[in-house]
Each structure stands twice: as structure tokens, then as C-alpha cells.
Image (cartoon, rainbow, N blue to C red; front, side):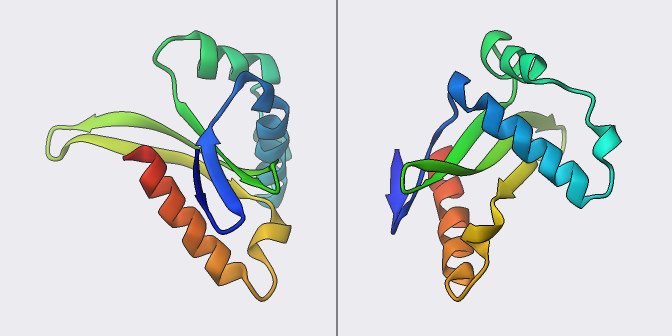
Length: 117
């Protein structure tokens, strides 16, 4: 687990799926497309933890509570070689709003880079 200030980043776990699914639904609602979510918690569990080489999940925690995620996978470009494709980055509003929002955002970006390296 990597930690800066009071935000820590760790690999996603099977038990995180209810949070992840809730965040996916929140993101779809924000994008005004809640009906676009056709996946389920079961599919997320299978694809993230049971398929062998599915997407990767990183969880951000604040005070030991999950507050965000990054979902990414490795891709390949004939021009650039191996690369990472970030599919979703979600952080709960109370973490990225307020007087420390820029600091938290910067921390999260740094932690995501460190965690992937």
C-alpha cells in the first residue's frame, strides 16, 4: 500500500466490488446516462478477479474507507508499444472539494503513478 498524507492507494480486492459498482452508477448518473450501465456486480467480480488477465483495479482510501478507484488495463500500440489505458477514475466528491481539493487531486495523481510503476 502506498500512502501520502491521509490518502492511501492499494490494489483492489474482491470485497471492493459493491463500492466500485456504486461509483460506476454514480458516474453514469453524472453523465446523464444511468441506463447505459448494463454490467452487474457479478460481472465486475468475474472480469476483475476471475478471468485471469482482465482490467486492473486500484482503490483510494481515506481514513481506511474506500473513496475512489482507478480501473485500467494494458493495451498495445504499434506506434508506442505497451501502454496503460485508464478507463475510469472516480473519487468521491467530499475528497476533491473544499480548500484542500487541489492538494488531494495532486496526491491521488501521484499515488496512481507510483502504484502503477
